[in-house]
Length: 164
Figure 1 (cartoon, rainbow, N blue to C red):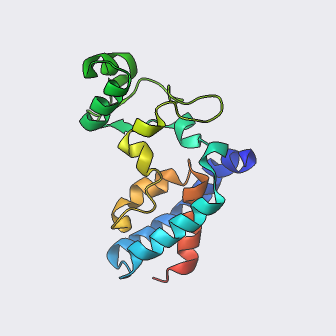
Figure 2: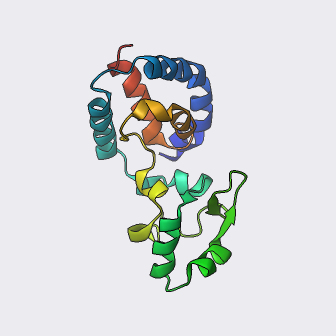
Figure 3: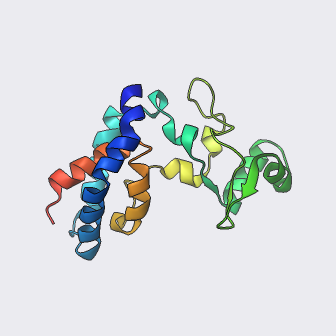
């Protein structure tokens, strides 16, 4: 698994133009059953993929924290929301709350998340490959294939299964 994770950035770069062209066509004329196809591809991939063997998303990127996320996680830590913000977050160039640093503060050496039950919405939904109207997040997916082995595999399966 680690070899695949290490090779992902290069694999994603090599496939970037092909993926970009595919997503451009997909956006113009999405198949009627796209959401169902994506759900099936997503579920099939995550039957094979164990995120605990990887955790590359937690090691290399940080999620956005919504106000609801901050409230929920602060409550979990028995902190005031502002204390949580001051301790763990910063505001990025797009004015969003993000972690002060990566890898994620809440990721353990065993790849388990110490706040898993209250984790941010962005973490819960990652890599977003089972999202409704999937074709609308193609830019995000293009980034995620370089981070997430499952996202990479799902996009490769998409290109085989969806004729556009």
